Length: 139
Image (tube, rainbow, N blue to C red; front, side, top):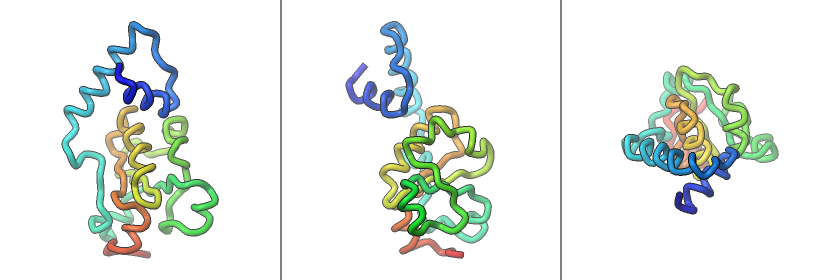
């Protein structure tokens, strides 16, 4: 298993598998990444029209202090590194959109959620900053 995948597994908060399972895990991650299309798991602010916005479950993955300073209206706050442990708080149907300031930390959380079977979870590319600049609908 490469050190990159090992670091990713540890970052997800998963127990590192015993030696015999390490190769299986690496193959599963690679299989997922090979199968997923380039745009899989991504939504851009320009796609958040009023109807899409109203249908989405929005999750601000920044810390509580940043969330308290302002967020996208209606979003709930689950810090990015808590997503795997709190996966049951996300709807398993419908569109779930994770965001942070720019999309980098929420992308990690989205990847974790998708690896854990939540294909309805998307990352808001360019994050809150991009939403403020280019989203067509802002309640």
